[in-house]
Amino acid sequence: QVQLQESGPGLVKPSETLSLTCTVAGGPINSAAYYWAWIRQPPGKGLECIGIIDHSGNTFYKPSLRSRVTIFVDMSKRQISAKLSSVTAADTAVYYCTRGWSGVGALESWGPGSLVTVSS
Amino acid sequence: QSVLTQPPSASGTPGQRVTISCSGSSSNIGTNTVNWYQQFPGTAPKFLIYSNNQRPSGVPGRFSGSRSGTSASLAISGLQSEDEADYYCASWDDSLNGPVFGTGTKVTVL
Image (tube, rainbow over all chains, first blue to last red; front, side):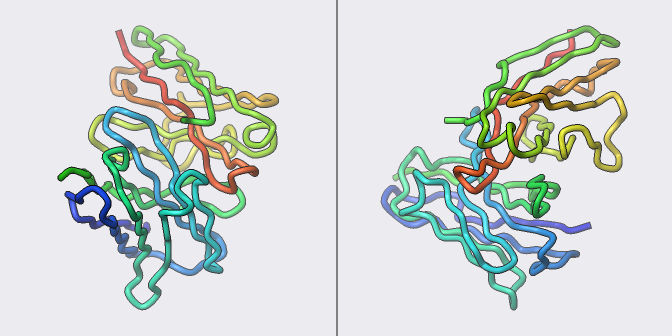
């Protein structure tokens, strides 16, 4: 059973860059059977995918965030990372690291989430 | 900003059947399979249904899913108090090249 654990700064100032990491344990990090996605949920609101990365390193980002987000994999550390630049209060959310099934798209594993608040 | 539309709430008494709808378009539900997630307050979503109507191991049989055209639905038969949660549908969107979610439905057990 794969385990995902996010880590983040907790508090970020407006206009700064938000950096998140997800450590993967108990499962492959580079398998064609899976892809990795960062999902966020603003307080009291629904779920939103900010971007994904597949086993080949191909990335797809939410169009409205494309200019600000980067997702990458560090194989040696077994980590999936996300960076979101020029943050505003609208980026305040719980950020989830997830693993999805290639082809089916289902997000079958979720980390517990990391709350990030953007405030001065 | 969600791509898929769900009713904001649904409710029922213990033992009743509750159905949640999910409406999408040809670029998502009309082309790709639908998945459902259950979320309790303060916790991460849980994988509930995949490929329209398949249950992962450990999910009770009272949860079932279906898809028709550009819509899908989740049914909870024999509603129990522990089913009180938020439910989200999701599907892959070919236009966005990523998963899209529904607006979420809060299920209340009366």
